[in-house]
Amino acid sequence: MKKGIKIDVITTNSGLEKSQNLIRSSWTEIEGVRIRYFPYFLGESYTFSPRLFGATLFESKIYDLIHITAIWNFPVLAGSLGAAIHKKPYIISPRGSLYEEAMNVKSAYLKKLYFGLVARHYVNKADALHFTTVDEKERVTSFLKLENRSFVIPNGFDLAGFNKLPEKGSFKKKHPILSDKKYILFLGRLTKQKGLDLLVEAFGQLTKDRKDLFLVIAGGDDEGYKSLVMQWLSNHGLLDKVLFTGILTGGEKLSAFVDAEMFVLPSYFENFGMAVVEAMLCGVPVVISNRVGICTEIQKNRAGIIIDLTPRSLFTGMKSLLENPDLSKNISKQGKKLAEENYDVNKIADMMIKAYEGVINCHKN
Image 1 (tube, rainbow, N blue to C red):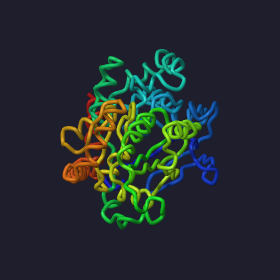
Image 2: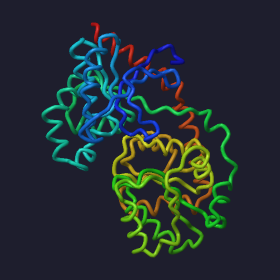
Image 3: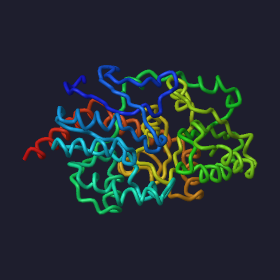
Image 4: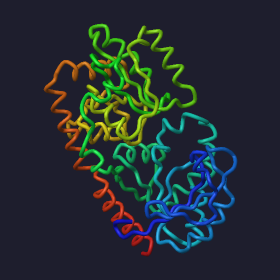
């Protein structure tokens, strides 16, 4: 809105808290953006919504461009049909949904069937595909043999939120068990995708020679995965060296970054890595797998340690930072520089507007 672009959002009430879960048949405004919520059926994995479908078909005609986020949900189909009926250009942002690994987890058969019968059509017909990293673009287009016009624009961050960071030591003060420890931070949903099995084994190897180490695992439990992680920790005799915090937000999340020795994300696949950029903006060195979307940019700028998907590689990467303060300091500096120069939300907004204009002009011609 600050850039002079009018944005309306049509979506379902999926994911809203009960206190927010109000069905609004008319527009409501949130921070300058008009939003319209609709009820849905058939569960949160598909969010079938006849009312949203009707509104999308009717209202698509008044817009210059339709930007669709996701792949598998019903609103994606509704948005693409609305665009087609009114001959409006549309962009799809898959947000990691089209990685080969993502297609092979959680209802893999249904995903492949749905993609073959339905989704491939609206993906192929899109005027452009928006990817958040070079890695996502290259791997997805190669895997699915896509020939669409596409562009890469990363996620943006409000740098002002990182100008004044919490005082160092505040997180440890809140959690006295960490007071005389150095800790490694994992922050993200507790899922199979995140590589926590690799982290537990690698951390276990580190603690054989480092008695001052702790592991902080911050994030929501996805489908009971925490119990499995705790079983692994128990098998390695590590339960007394790990702190589960649950979901961290705001200043508490920033303080967790600030006090950490490093941030680790050994994901099996990740289209971007929001927490990685947050860590870099907090001046924390990062260790990530070569399957995290922004690994290409980080490796090119020597802004982090990139590891293979093995416990040994992760162990070596974490150990190198713990034993080499100069390396850790340099990586922190390079990471902060990379994040500030490439992920400023104002720059990202300008890039997206330019991409929108290009798609609209191409569609007209």
